[in-house]
Length: 247
Image 1 (cartoon, rainbow, N blue to C red):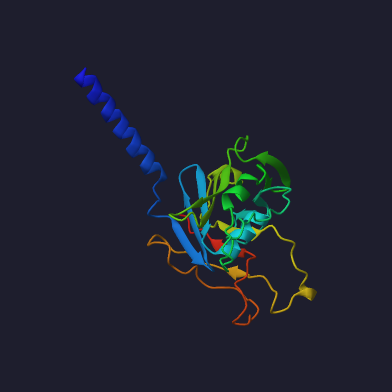
Image 2 (cartoon, rainbow, N blue to C red):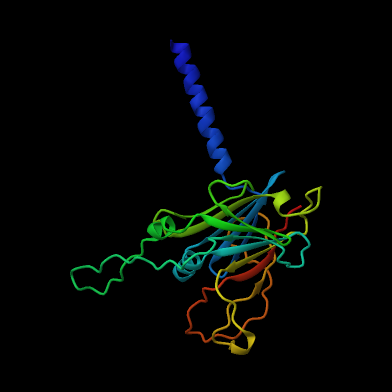
């Protein structure tokens, strides 16, 4: 009996350690930090893993209200032939703010991010060189997994994670993604150039990459952007391409 108890204890310990190893952040991932947003990209022999996170309130609300489209371009030329859009056919979610305190203070009401996430539809869209199909994020034939969650000690960090098979990104039988570039866009109507002005132009960034070494590095060079008054709030529109830096 003592031997059996010891055996089960060993099995439990091995299972727990294996689970922790699976969710542990890889040390050789490409990490980019730009404009209050962290991007982490990694791979194994079959999949690409992308994590996007932010603690910036306005950016969090923009992502949750409108959703994201992620482009994967194997050529490195920022082409838009392959993408995953989530959610698909989404009505922008309005934040549910809790009631103001009854003591007539000026304290701002809190936002229930978890409720917003719970109300986001499960339908997403996948496009591969002209073939666009709708799928459900939790169960689909494409073997794509994705979703939003709030993390951190104060549940103030929004994370968007996506796991996608390499053969859903490239037409190359060898699955060579050494030139892979990734584009991240909020699902908001694009502004017409003739209506744009330096004060309302969305951020358009062109990044590089950083291998390992934590999350604090810069994402490399930036593209052209309009000059913004110093008193203007940080933009909430994401329009960003970066080199995945995969080997």
